[in-house]
Length: 260
Length: 261
Image 1 (cartoon, rainbow over the protein chains, first blue to last red):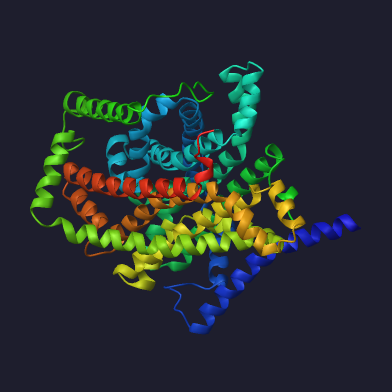
Image 2 (image 1 turned 45 degrees about the horizontal axis):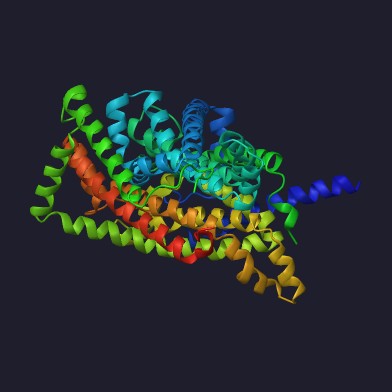
């Protein structure tokens, strides 16, 4: 009984802010009399989502295309970011040498070179995956680098005293210590990845949730545009939720234990 | 002294290695552009890009675009990052808010800010206000998530000690937890510095009458790759400058982490 009550309370706590947000949105749209082509009400968006997913089912191909491109780019960019971040954090000389390249990667507004990526990689999945990988690389890289370097010097001294090699020290001291920071980077990076995917879909216009938003906004069909945004948010939320669950499982020593 | 992070480098390596990195990068780019691609409409050489940039600045058309983008980005960043930090501290400390708001903000943040850019333009007009709003919205969420993340990780015996000496809850937050969270905060700020320019430029892509994003869009319509590269290079320089300032501030504020041990 207590378990069920707890579970219900947990669900209520999670859903309450979303319900409040929707309520506020509804009140503002209805109270101010905002026309639906500027900002549709939650009911209109809900109806459009229902028809898009169930009765007409016209949104599934777009969602699938977006999910596929984002996931591929995220895995590619994330794996590279953790590898490069660890390598540069563990080697000062390499860090200094690669610093200009890192600054360049960070500073160049990835979204701004989307047309160039398109020019280079063509009108298919490859250009979207490439832009997604580029755009989600940096936050994950920073998370890895900062985390690896934040290992406590006392522990590093201990490893040194025990004659541990650099690889061993990295695997058993720096990397576990960096895990929380890496996950923070991954969580930001997942949001970035969706941004990259959507922007590329704006430009290529060959399908995907970004194309759906752009196309329906141009047609003054705000309910469809906002419905696509909400579904993108769900996609982001599912990804973020999976990452948060993985973080709780893998980095169990940080976080909620110290609360209250 | 040797350490796990590699040999301690001599002082000259601090500038010599990055300089070598720049030289390598430029050489590789030039080789690629001049001999592999060999098509300036696809990829200009560094010299072609700088020539384009020089003509642009000397022609006097540069300053209005620069000022528009700088104002939009910095103003939006100041508003969004400071609000995100304050909200993150409060939410990271108050458990009920943390449980309810943090998952929602993760969901909201995952909904690409860029996707609402057209709506933001409709609401705030094509002028400066829409860029400021777009940058502020985007940087708020990044800053908020990094700050809350830092507050989560800020466990320490210092907190117990502060409590034992009768520190009140918010005294502990200000004196201990926020300081322990600062590494996360500054890493968030560094991401924000890059994100701010991106958002401002996207806003200018969609609707503007000046700004670097507006210029890039115009150059891309003219298939002027050298012009695009020049504008992107200016944006990159601005963003690196801002990131450098953030790193400097990080060293200055979290000075105890950068002391030689």
